[in-house]
Length: 392
Image 1 (cartoon, rainbow, N blue to C red):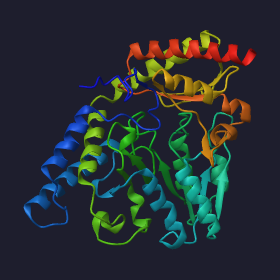
Image 2: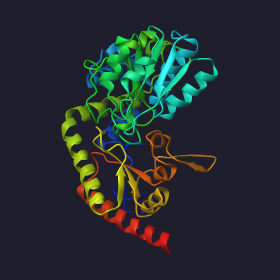
Image 3: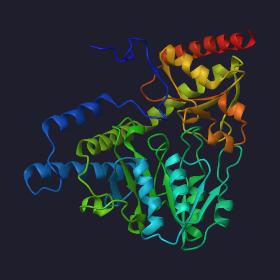
């Protein structure tokens, strides 16, 4: 049997890219595989196999609702958070929110910003808010852009690159007081910080299973604002016709189970990843390798570290780390093979050079102290090697 700590190539693997996706928990994999092997009936069928699948959906809906303190009938299963985000935003184009303006921020996930760009081309008024040096939106600046009764605000709960947590309660409360609908992409926040719709007046929330050790390809749109949403696709009456099509029963089963597991050990996991992250940062800082922890001066997700390294190229560091089995990411995208600096870091005031020198590390409950030590040793050695090469 393959060692779980070995990559496909037989080298040791330390996975520190859990903001991109998490490794599914073994118990989630076992449950999903068992459901697929036993066969799932179509939940819309009236026979016993269909009823068993409907029971799976009911339980998972309860699990999702419990995790975010929502009402079960306000949970719509989707194919992921990108789809959930699109369902919300595209209601502005021709659905129940036609005529509304969209207010969002410059540091949102591309599923929000790319959709916003499309909406703008279709004639929807789109306002992109700036952020401060820490990557946060100013609630007062947001309020100034709200047209009462005709505005949808979409601001992420926490950033996928830096882990910076927005002042989400103040943003949502301010938006509601000004007469706007409030949507949040909570993909990164779910399972890492408390997300309670009973405390934060969010109308709509997007989440994804694969960011909380569940399966890929399944997510949910949650909240009392579903009544304002129009379907993006058309077909059957599944998910109250907001997301028609036969439900992904095994995936939804995995989503619910992953959330139930995380709920049972929420504080322990948060303390574990925060300890790893803080130790990682403090040791790198004491070694003189760090120019800045991007977003490190404000509240962040406990697992996330975005580090501006001193005097090295971030991509080179990532590639060398990958060669020794350490998986991490640079906060940049590639278009037509041309590297671009992170738009999130640029919006926070970093120069192109500083953004290119930044690397994101995302810890998870599956990481160990031994892996942390190996990662630290590897970063130190490779950083020194890259500096020597640059001076040669």
